[in-house]
Length: 336
Ligand SMILES: *[C@@H]1O[C@H](CO)[C@@H](O)[C@H](O)[C@H]1NC(C)=O
Ligand SMILES: *[C@@H]1O[C@H](CO)[C@@H](O)[C@H](O)[C@H]1NC(C)=O
Ligand SMILES: *[C@@H]1O[C@H](CO)[C@@H](O)[C@H](O)[C@H]1NC(C)=O
Ligand SMILES: *[C@@H]1O[C@H](CO)[C@@H](O)[C@H](O)[C@H]1NC(C)=O
Ligand SMILES: *[C@@H]1O[C@H](CO)[C@@H](O)[C@H](O)[C@H]1NC(C)=O
Ligand SMILES: CC(=O)N[C@H]1CO[C@H](CO)[C@@H](O)[C@@H]1O
Image 1 (cartoon, helix red, strand yellow):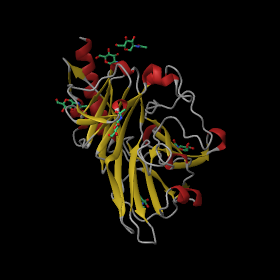
Image 2 (image 1 turned 45 degrees about the vertical axis):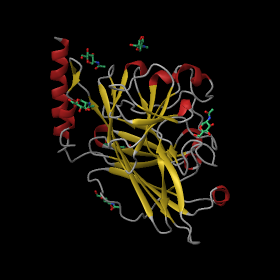
Image 3 (image 1 turned 135 degrees about the horizontal axis):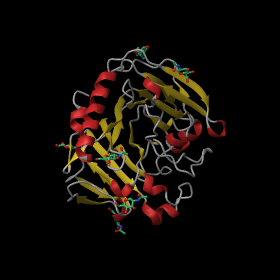
Image 4 (image 1 turned 180 degrees about the horizontal axis):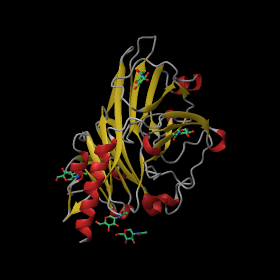
């Protein structure tokens, strides 16, 4: 009976989503304000109270709320909003190096650099209609050039779509004037907020090859039907599909990750022991978070002078519905 009721609720939710697509009059606004420790912050206000918050420090999205004012992203209870420490949570950007796979500090310097608002960016395509967005820009400082001797322009558009979707569009251009190419690795290190990590499932990565960061990045092939969590996990899935889902069974919510130009996907949860060694992560925080990161790691991106690389990450949260182990969230997703 409860199951049936739930399915009915899910179908109604699906209709609600379809219906709201056609509503045009909603509050679109961009608010520039101050966040924790007086750091500059931009708030995007979208349809029916949906919102996104972005710190210019790191161009880091730290909040993404749906129309019920529910937070979709995890930020550590012990996050330190004090440069040069990166912010623990939300969506850090790993550029120009993922992890310690190179000479730079782990995850590169974009996540602890000060970005600026890009007043007049070259046109973005597609330009999502009925959306609210902010354009940010990162240029290397003299200090950056000492550790990574390459000139670049990194333009990031952060968009809150008309249905509350969060879209990050990256454009990175090699502006070296000495004719040299550069290579980089990249990740949007998204921390999703989940109700109970033990009840979460990731779909879309089954049977794929991955590098296990806990086993010296040895390559394995995933054997399971779906990815679930009961211990520390740190894997780089390779050549992944453009759509990955994170199912939060307790919340009846599915995060849908759609990506373009980002072939790899990192799945990370530190679990209890490792969590204790991370100073800016609360002891029990690992239970409420899961990182599923859209990335380009296995094959570093190489850019010739004047060349530009583009990537897109789109996150949405939809009600997920189950019946005898099956889901019909595809119904909700149809046409999106
Ligand atoms: C739209 O958002 C702005 C910024 O938060 C707020 O001041 C204003 O009251 C909102 N308007 C409506 C109609 O919700
Ligand atoms: C994108 O479209 C919006 C209208 O939906 C317009 O206001 C904005 O100027 C466009 N931006 C760019 C960079 O083309
Ligand atoms: C999380 O899920 C696990 C496995 O189902 C369960 O044992 C545990 O009690 C749950 N934790 C909470 C806080 O509900
Ligand atoms: C880890 O892998 C590298 C190369 O893939 C190898 O040189 C090194 O010996 C390995 N270390 C361990 C502890 O297995
Ligand atoms: C999720 O769905 C189940 C029925 O399948 C229902 O009992 C439960 O209350 C729902 N949970 C939430 C948080 O909506
Ligand atoms: C989130 C999601 O869509 N999960 C699965 C639901 O079931 C279909 C098959 O019926 C799968 O293709 C989806 O990946």
